[in-house]
Image (cartoon, rainbow, N blue to C red; front, side, top):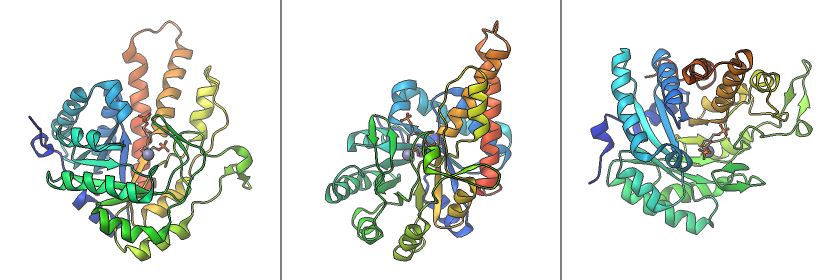
Length: 331
Ligand code: G3H
Ligand code: 13P
Ligand code: ZN
Protein backbone atom coordinates (compact mmCIF):
# COMPACT_ATOMS: atom_id res chain seq x y z
CA UNK A 1 0.00 0.00 0.00
CA UNK A 2 1.40 3.36 -0.92
CA UNK A 3 1.20 6.49 1.25
CA UNK A 4 0.82 9.91 -0.35
CA UNK A 5 2.61 12.92 1.12
CA UNK A 6 -0.71 14.75 0.84
CA UNK A 7 -2.17 12.47 3.52
CA UNK A 8 0.71 13.41 5.82
CA UNK A 9 0.03 17.14 5.42
CA UNK A 10 3.29 17.75 3.53
CA UNK A 11 3.76 19.90 0.44
CA UNK A 12 5.85 19.48 -2.71
CA UNK A 13 8.39 22.13 -3.66
CA UNK A 14 6.85 23.49 -6.89
CA UNK A 15 5.14 26.63 -5.61
CA UNK A 16 7.69 27.26 -2.84
CA UNK A 17 10.51 27.38 -5.40
CA UNK A 18 8.73 29.77 -7.72
CA UNK A 19 8.07 32.16 -4.82
CA UNK A 20 11.69 31.87 -3.68
CA UNK A 21 13.07 32.60 -7.16
CA UNK A 22 10.73 35.59 -7.56
CA UNK A 23 11.42 36.82 -4.01
CA UNK A 24 15.24 36.53 -4.11
CA UNK A 25 15.65 34.11 -1.22
CA UNK A 26 16.43 30.41 -0.78
CA UNK A 27 14.55 27.75 1.14
CA UNK A 28 16.62 25.94 3.76
CA UNK A 29 17.17 22.23 3.17
CA UNK A 30 18.38 20.79 6.47
CA UNK A 31 19.24 17.10 6.90
CA UNK A 32 17.86 15.15 9.84
CA UNK A 33 18.59 11.72 11.29
CA UNK A 34 17.18 11.96 14.81
CA UNK A 35 14.67 13.62 17.11
CA UNK A 36 16.79 16.52 18.35
CA UNK A 37 17.76 17.59 14.82
CA UNK A 38 14.12 17.55 13.75
CA UNK A 39 13.04 19.52 16.83
CA UNK A 40 15.74 22.15 16.23
CA UNK A 41 14.80 22.54 12.55
CA UNK A 42 11.10 22.91 13.30
CA UNK A 43 11.56 25.27 16.25
CA UNK A 44 13.93 27.49 14.24
CA UNK A 45 11.72 27.56 11.15
CA UNK A 46 8.49 28.22 13.06
CA UNK A 47 10.14 30.97 15.11
CA UNK A 48 11.53 32.63 11.96
CA UNK A 49 8.34 31.86 9.97
CA UNK A 50 10.34 30.11 7.24
CA UNK A 51 9.26 27.32 4.88
CA UNK A 52 11.48 24.26 5.26
CA UNK A 53 12.75 21.23 3.39
CA UNK A 54 13.44 18.27 5.66
CA UNK A 55 16.13 16.23 3.96
CA UNK A 56 16.64 12.53 4.42
CA UNK A 57 19.67 10.84 2.87
CA UNK A 58 19.96 7.13 2.10
CA UNK A 59 22.32 7.01 5.09
CA UNK A 60 19.68 8.60 7.32
CA UNK A 61 17.14 5.99 6.22
CA UNK A 62 19.59 3.25 7.12
CA UNK A 63 20.42 4.88 10.47
CA UNK A 64 16.98 5.86 11.67
CA UNK A 65 14.61 3.50 9.82
CA UNK A 66 12.44 4.83 7.01
CA UNK A 67 9.12 4.09 8.76
CA UNK A 68 10.18 6.06 11.80
CA UNK A 69 11.44 8.95 9.67
CA UNK A 70 8.18 9.13 7.72
CA UNK A 71 6.16 9.20 10.90
CA UNK A 72 8.47 11.84 12.34
CA UNK A 73 7.63 13.99 9.30
CA UNK A 74 3.92 13.36 9.90
CA UNK A 75 4.50 14.35 13.53
CA UNK A 76 6.35 17.46 12.36
CA UNK A 77 3.24 18.70 10.57
CA UNK A 78 1.16 18.27 13.73
CA UNK A 79 3.86 19.73 15.96
CA UNK A 80 4.14 22.99 13.99
CA UNK A 81 0.36 23.41 14.31
CA UNK A 82 0.75 23.01 18.06
CA UNK A 83 3.53 25.60 18.03
CA UNK A 84 0.96 28.03 16.66
CA UNK A 85 2.32 28.91 13.21
CA UNK A 86 1.92 26.58 10.25
CA UNK A 87 4.86 26.52 7.85
CA UNK A 88 5.06 24.57 4.58
CA UNK A 89 7.06 21.36 5.11
CA UNK A 90 8.64 19.37 2.27
CA UNK A 91 9.98 15.86 2.92
CA UNK A 92 12.82 15.38 0.47
CA UNK A 93 15.12 12.48 -0.46
CA UNK A 94 18.69 13.80 -0.56
CA UNK A 95 21.01 12.25 -3.19
CA UNK A 96 18.80 9.40 -4.36
CA UNK A 97 20.97 7.25 -6.60
CA UNK A 98 18.55 4.70 -8.11
CA UNK A 99 15.04 4.68 -9.52
CA UNK A 100 14.08 2.04 -6.92
CA UNK A 101 15.13 4.22 -3.97
CA UNK A 102 13.25 7.24 -5.36
CA UNK A 103 10.15 5.11 -6.01
CA UNK A 104 10.26 3.69 -2.50
CA UNK A 105 10.37 7.21 -1.03
CA UNK A 106 7.55 8.43 -3.31
CA UNK A 107 5.46 5.41 -2.27
CA UNK A 108 6.19 6.19 1.38
CA UNK A 109 5.17 9.79 1.82
CA UNK A 110 8.04 11.86 0.40
CA UNK A 111 6.88 14.98 -1.42
CA UNK A 112 10.14 15.60 -3.26
CA UNK A 113 13.09 13.47 -4.38
CA UNK A 114 16.54 14.11 -5.74
CA UNK A 115 17.86 11.75 -8.36
CA UNK A 116 21.58 12.33 -8.46
CA UNK A 117 22.78 10.94 -11.77
CA UNK A 118 25.75 13.29 -11.86
CA UNK A 119 28.28 10.45 -11.58
CA UNK A 120 26.89 8.84 -14.76
CA UNK A 121 27.47 9.84 -18.37
CA UNK A 122 25.30 12.73 -19.60
CA UNK A 123 22.95 10.43 -21.56
CA UNK A 124 22.62 7.92 -18.69
CA UNK A 125 21.92 10.81 -16.27
CA UNK A 126 19.11 11.99 -18.57
CA UNK A 127 17.65 8.49 -18.92
CA UNK A 128 17.64 7.82 -15.16
CA UNK A 129 16.35 11.28 -14.24
CA UNK A 130 13.55 11.08 -16.81
CA UNK A 131 12.45 7.70 -15.45
CA UNK A 132 12.19 9.15 -11.92
CA UNK A 133 10.40 12.29 -13.15
CA UNK A 134 7.74 10.23 -14.94
CA UNK A 135 6.95 8.22 -11.82
CA UNK A 136 7.20 11.20 -9.44
CA UNK A 137 5.01 13.53 -11.48
CA UNK A 138 2.31 10.86 -11.73
CA UNK A 139 2.19 11.12 -7.90
CA UNK A 140 2.46 14.93 -7.63
CA UNK A 141 6.04 14.66 -6.32
CA UNK A 142 8.70 17.17 -7.44
CA UNK A 143 12.17 16.10 -8.65
CA UNK A 144 15.64 17.62 -8.33
CA UNK A 145 18.30 16.55 -10.84
CA UNK A 146 22.02 17.30 -10.85
CA UNK A 147 24.50 18.30 -13.52
CA UNK A 148 28.19 18.61 -12.66
CA UNK A 149 30.01 16.85 -9.81
CA UNK A 150 30.76 18.27 -6.37
CA UNK A 151 33.97 17.27 -4.61
CA UNK A 152 33.62 15.59 -1.21
CA UNK A 153 31.76 12.68 0.33
CA UNK A 154 28.17 11.74 -0.43
CA UNK A 155 27.31 8.56 1.43
CA UNK A 156 29.74 6.02 -0.03
CA UNK A 157 30.69 8.04 -3.10
CA UNK A 158 33.85 10.13 -2.79
CA UNK A 159 34.74 12.58 -5.57
CA UNK A 160 38.27 13.98 -5.30
CA UNK A 161 37.75 16.76 -7.81
CA UNK A 162 34.70 18.82 -8.69
CA UNK A 163 33.54 19.16 -12.27
CA UNK A 164 31.70 22.42 -12.79
CA UNK A 165 28.30 22.33 -14.45
CA UNK A 166 28.52 23.05 -18.18
CA UNK A 167 26.01 25.84 -18.92
CA UNK A 168 25.61 24.61 -22.50
CA UNK A 169 24.03 21.38 -21.19
CA UNK A 170 21.39 22.75 -18.80
CA UNK A 171 18.66 23.69 -21.27
CA UNK A 172 18.75 20.31 -23.01
CA UNK A 173 18.87 18.46 -19.66
CA UNK A 174 15.92 20.33 -18.17
CA UNK A 175 13.85 19.95 -21.34
CA UNK A 176 14.55 16.26 -21.88
CA UNK A 177 14.16 15.17 -18.24
CA UNK A 178 11.29 17.40 -17.09
CA UNK A 179 12.96 18.03 -13.69
CA UNK A 180 11.52 20.71 -11.39
CA UNK A 181 14.87 21.97 -10.11
CA UNK A 182 18.53 21.55 -10.92
CA UNK A 183 21.51 21.15 -8.55
CA UNK A 184 24.65 22.65 -10.02
CA UNK A 185 28.36 22.58 -9.27
CA UNK A 186 29.98 26.02 -9.01
CA UNK A 187 32.66 25.44 -6.37
CA UNK A 188 30.81 24.19 -3.29
CA UNK A 189 31.60 20.73 -1.94
CA UNK A 190 30.30 18.34 0.69
CA UNK A 191 31.60 17.96 4.22
CA UNK A 192 33.43 20.18 6.73
CA UNK A 193 36.76 20.18 4.88
CA UNK A 194 35.88 22.06 1.72
CA UNK A 195 39.14 23.96 1.43
CA UNK A 196 42.54 23.55 3.06
CA UNK A 197 44.18 26.69 4.53
CA UNK A 198 46.70 26.44 1.66
CA UNK A 199 43.92 26.96 -0.87
CA UNK A 200 42.82 30.18 0.89
CA UNK A 201 44.11 33.70 1.24
CA UNK A 202 44.06 35.68 4.51
CA UNK A 203 42.03 38.90 4.70
CA UNK A 204 43.07 41.96 6.77
CA UNK A 205 41.51 40.40 9.91
CA UNK A 206 43.52 37.21 9.44
CA UNK A 207 40.42 35.23 8.38
CA UNK A 208 40.98 32.51 5.77
CA UNK A 209 39.06 33.31 2.58
CA UNK A 210 38.52 30.47 0.09
CA UNK A 211 38.39 30.90 -3.70
CA UNK A 212 35.04 32.50 -4.63
CA UNK A 213 32.17 30.50 -6.08
CA UNK A 214 31.96 30.56 -9.87
CA UNK A 215 29.19 33.14 -10.13
CA UNK A 216 29.94 33.54 -13.84
CA UNK A 217 28.77 29.94 -14.38
CA UNK A 218 25.60 30.58 -12.36
CA UNK A 219 24.87 33.70 -14.43
CA UNK A 220 25.40 31.81 -17.67
CA UNK A 221 23.03 29.06 -16.47
CA UNK A 222 20.39 31.64 -15.49
CA UNK A 223 20.62 33.17 -18.97
CA UNK A 224 19.94 29.82 -20.58
CA UNK A 225 17.05 28.75 -18.28
CA UNK A 226 15.64 32.04 -16.93
CA UNK A 227 13.71 31.70 -13.67
CA UNK A 228 14.36 27.96 -13.40
CA UNK A 229 14.90 26.83 -9.76
CA UNK A 230 18.58 26.17 -9.02
CA UNK A 231 19.89 24.22 -6.01
CA UNK A 232 23.21 24.54 -4.18
CA UNK A 233 24.54 21.54 -2.30
CA UNK A 234 27.58 21.61 -0.04
CA UNK A 235 26.71 25.02 1.41
CA UNK A 236 27.95 24.80 4.97
CA UNK A 237 30.09 27.71 6.12
CA UNK A 238 32.05 25.74 8.76
CA UNK A 239 32.00 28.35 11.56
CA UNK A 240 35.45 28.63 13.13
CA UNK A 241 33.80 29.03 16.60
CA UNK A 242 32.52 25.45 16.37
CA UNK A 243 35.86 24.04 15.22
CA UNK A 244 37.53 25.85 18.16
CA UNK A 245 34.84 24.70 20.62
CA UNK A 246 35.27 21.09 19.47
CA UNK A 247 39.07 21.25 19.74
CA UNK A 248 38.97 23.10 23.10
CA UNK A 249 36.87 20.28 24.53
CA UNK A 250 38.88 17.24 23.59
CA UNK A 251 38.24 17.10 19.84
CA UNK A 252 40.85 16.92 17.11
CA UNK A 253 39.48 18.54 13.97
CA UNK A 254 41.90 19.74 11.32
CA UNK A 255 41.64 23.32 10.12
CA UNK A 256 38.52 23.47 7.96
CA UNK A 257 37.10 26.19 5.75
CA UNK A 258 33.59 26.42 4.29
CA UNK A 259 31.60 28.70 1.98
CA UNK A 260 31.50 32.30 3.25
CA UNK A 261 27.99 33.37 4.22
CA UNK A 262 28.05 36.53 2.04
CA UNK A 263 28.54 34.33 -1.02
CA UNK A 264 25.55 32.19 -0.09
CA UNK A 265 23.45 35.32 0.48
CA UNK A 266 24.43 36.52 -2.99
CA UNK A 267 23.49 33.14 -4.48
CA UNK A 268 20.16 33.12 -2.62
CA UNK A 269 19.26 36.47 -4.18
CA UNK A 270 19.54 34.84 -7.64
CA UNK A 271 17.69 31.81 -9.08
CA UNK A 272 19.22 29.66 -6.33
CA UNK A 273 16.10 28.73 -4.37
CA UNK A 274 17.27 25.78 -2.23
CA UNK A 275 20.45 25.69 -0.16
CA UNK A 276 21.59 22.41 1.44
CA UNK A 277 23.21 22.58 4.86
CA UNK A 278 24.17 19.53 6.89
CA UNK A 279 27.79 19.74 8.07
CA UNK A 280 27.31 23.01 10.01
CA UNK A 281 24.56 21.33 12.02
CA UNK A 282 26.83 18.39 12.77
CA UNK A 283 29.53 20.77 13.98
CA UNK A 284 27.10 22.74 16.17
CA UNK A 285 25.79 19.61 17.87
CA UNK A 286 29.22 18.05 18.35
CA UNK A 287 30.62 21.29 19.78
CA UNK A 288 27.73 21.59 22.27
CA UNK A 289 27.88 17.92 23.33
CA UNK A 290 31.66 18.04 23.80
CA UNK A 291 31.43 21.19 25.90
CA UNK A 292 28.74 19.82 28.24
CA UNK A 293 30.56 16.53 28.74
CA UNK A 294 33.93 18.22 29.21
CA UNK A 295 32.48 20.66 31.76
CA UNK A 296 30.46 17.92 33.51
CA UNK A 297 32.39 14.64 33.28
CA UNK A 298 29.91 12.90 35.61
CA UNK A 299 26.89 13.63 33.41
CA UNK A 300 25.18 10.59 31.91
CA UNK A 301 21.61 11.70 31.17
CA UNK A 302 21.44 12.06 27.35
CA UNK A 303 18.89 14.87 27.72
CA UNK A 304 21.52 16.92 29.53
CA UNK A 305 23.83 16.97 26.50
CA UNK A 306 21.40 16.43 23.61
CA UNK A 307 19.19 19.27 24.93
CA UNK A 308 22.00 21.87 24.71
CA UNK A 309 22.99 20.41 21.32
CA UNK A 310 19.41 20.96 20.11
CA UNK A 311 19.46 24.54 21.45
CA UNK A 312 22.73 25.31 19.64
CA UNK A 313 21.35 23.83 16.42
CA UNK A 314 18.17 25.89 16.66
CA UNK A 315 20.25 29.06 17.14
CA UNK A 316 22.37 28.19 14.09
CA UNK A 317 19.35 27.53 11.85
CA UNK A 318 17.60 30.72 12.94
CA UNK A 319 20.74 32.63 11.98
CA UNK A 320 20.86 30.90 8.58
CA UNK A 321 17.20 31.63 7.82
CA UNK A 322 17.41 35.29 8.86
CA UNK A 323 20.89 36.33 7.75
CA UNK A 324 22.01 33.94 5.02
CA UNK A 325 19.10 32.43 3.09
CA UNK A 326 16.61 35.26 3.57
CA UNK A 327 13.77 32.77 4.14
CA UNK A 328 12.53 34.30 7.41
CA UNK A 329 8.95 35.59 7.20
CA UNK A 330 8.40 33.86 3.85
CA UNK A 331 6.20 31.00 5.13
O1 G3H B 1 25.25 15.30 1.03
C1 G3H B 1 25.22 14.54 1.98
C2 G3H B 1 24.51 14.91 3.23
O2 G3H B 1 25.32 15.71 4.04
C3 G3H B 1 24.01 13.69 3.94
O3 G3H B 1 25.06 13.00 4.52
O4 G3H B 1 24.81 10.73 3.55
O5 G3H B 1 26.13 11.10 5.66
O6 G3H B 1 23.63 11.28 5.68
P1 G3H B 1 24.90 11.41 4.86
P1 13P C 1 27.33 20.35 3.54
O1 13P C 1 28.19 19.15 3.75
O2 13P C 1 28.12 21.52 3.04
O3 13P C 1 26.52 20.72 4.73
O4 13P C 1 26.28 19.99 2.36
C1 13P C 1 25.14 19.24 2.62
C2 13P C 1 24.47 18.77 1.38
O5 13P C 1 24.72 19.19 0.28
C3 13P C 1 23.40 17.76 1.55
O6 13P C 1 22.92 17.32 0.32
ZN1 ZN D 1 24.38 17.28 -1.23
